Length: 108
Image 1 (tube, rainbow, N blue to C red):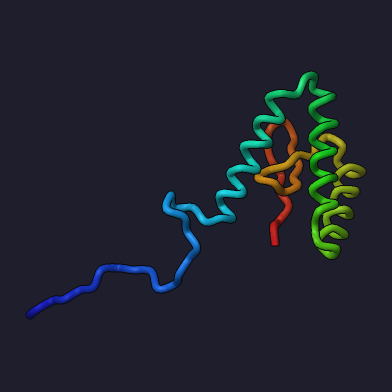
Image 2 (cartoon, rainbow, N blue to C red):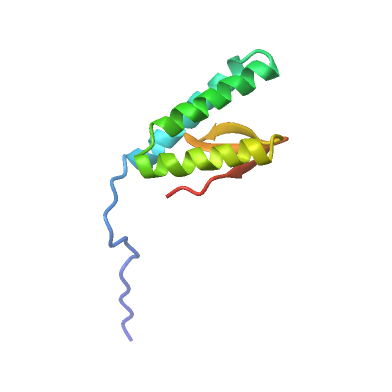
């Protein structure tokens, strides 16, 4: 028997750069790098927390109206119900952390 197999190839096209990441992935990597640089520059823990909350609120303000309304409600719930959670950005998206453990909002 002559077994002729074709090599496994993707049948769907993706917009990948030569390095292997999509434009969206590269954007997320750049956002995370900015977050890490900003956290390294911050001074006291209180100043760092205030800066992170401001960054989260700024990111929420940039969202589409329906997403923004949901994110604002979640932010208010987390701040009122669980004050031990600290708001922070994670790959450019609002999230909340408690003692280093991250609690993420589901992305759409």
